[in-house]
Length: 363
Image 1 (cartoon, rainbow, N blue to C red):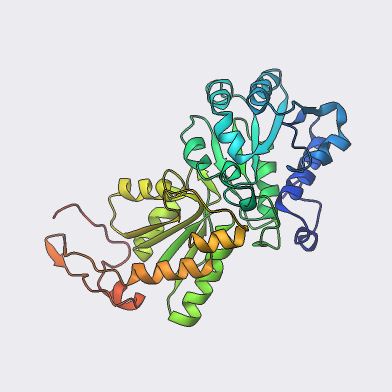
Image 2: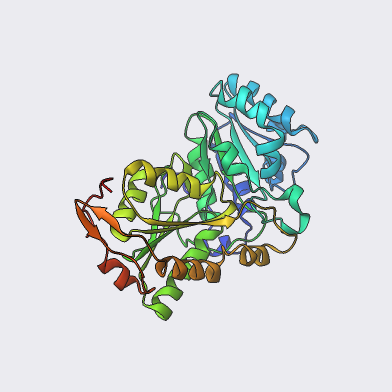
C-alpha cells in the first residue's frame, strides 16, 4: 500500500503493539505536519514518546487530566489539526466519556483516540486498569469508528487508516507483546471489513484483538483433533461492523462463536448477535469473554485461560455448542428435527437447512 509501514515483518515480532503505534505515528507525522500527539502523563507507557522526541513542538502532555485532554483535542481538531490522543483504554472510555461524547462525537471532529492496555492485557494492575467495558461504551457513540487490531502490523494499518479518514476514531490496543498474526501488511486491511483467516463449513469463530491468534490456533486443534472445519473471522472493526461477512457465516455454518477480551455485554458478541437477529436467520450462538464479572488479577495469558478466550477455551466452547440439543423447529411448514446433536459437525450440518436457503419465522 502507498505509504506502507517502514519496518519489516521480522522486526515487528520484536516490537510491542504500542511500539508499532508509536513508530507509525512518527511516519505519519513526517507526511502530515498537521498531526499532533497528546498524552495524559503516559508518554512512556503508551509509546507516544517517539513522536515527542521527533516532533517536540507538536507534542502536548496535559498531565493526569484525561478529560481535559480530549476537550483540548476537540479544539485542536476544529482548528484544522489532527490530534492523536493516547491514554489507557479504561481511562479513555470511562473517565473521559462526557468529553468524548459532547466535545468530539457530537461535534464530529477529527480526533483519533488510541486506547492502550486494552482488555485484561494489564492484568497485574487489577480491575481499575482492566478495560472490559470500553467496546460497549464507545460503539454506542454516534459518529465513532471502533477498531481493535489483531497484532502490531494491523495496528499500524489501523492508525494509518484513521489518519487518512475524517472523523472520530477509537483504536484499542494491548499493553505488551502480542502474538504475531500477520507477516505482511498487504493482506487487504479495510475499515469495516472482516478478514477471513481460515475457511470452514461447520462453525464460525469471530474474534478481535488478542483473541484472533487464539481463534486461529483453536481452528487448527478442531481440525486435527476433532475433524471439525472452523472458519475464523478477524472482526477488527467493531463499528461499523461487517454485516455481510456475519450473515454469510450464518448461512454457511449455522454456528457462531465470538471471542473477545471484554465483557460479553455490549461488545463484539453483542454487535454480532444484533446482526444475526436482525437478519432473520437462525443459528446456534455463543459469546466468549468476561461473563458479567470483573477479572481476577494476574498475567494476561492466565486471565485469557480463566475466561476461556484462549485456544483451549475456544475449542471447549465450540465442542459444547456442537453437542447442544435443540428444540424442534418448523421451517417452511416442515418440522426440522435437530435435537440431540452428537457433537460431530458433519452430523449437525446434515440436520440443518442447506447453505443459502432462508429460514422463516413460521413456527
